[in-house]
Image (cartoon, rainbow, N blue to C red; front, side):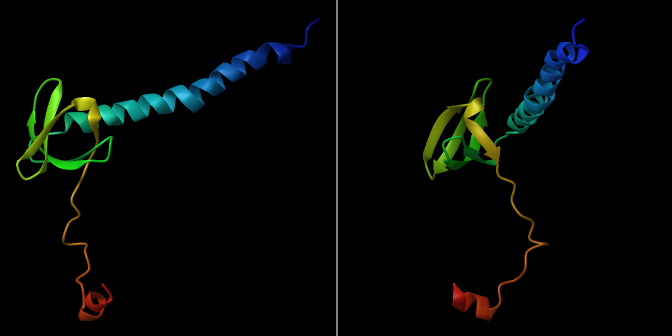
Length: 103
């Protein structure tokens, strides 16, 4: 008779592969899709190539981003790497005179 653990090894490997690679990738893809759908005009973004700018227009397949005053580039939606969320002023600590001298 064959050893039953030898039959379970491929099943265990498939299950491990699913939980280590496929499931986290689905969650990451869902989060990325939600982030891209939240892009609206006026939002500050960073592209996948590291360019920062402000979204000026959103079309079905493209996004217009102003990277400098008067310089607007058009990108595919997938090129938006992340949305930059401004820090709230409430949690920030004020800069003291001693800290200003260190800058």
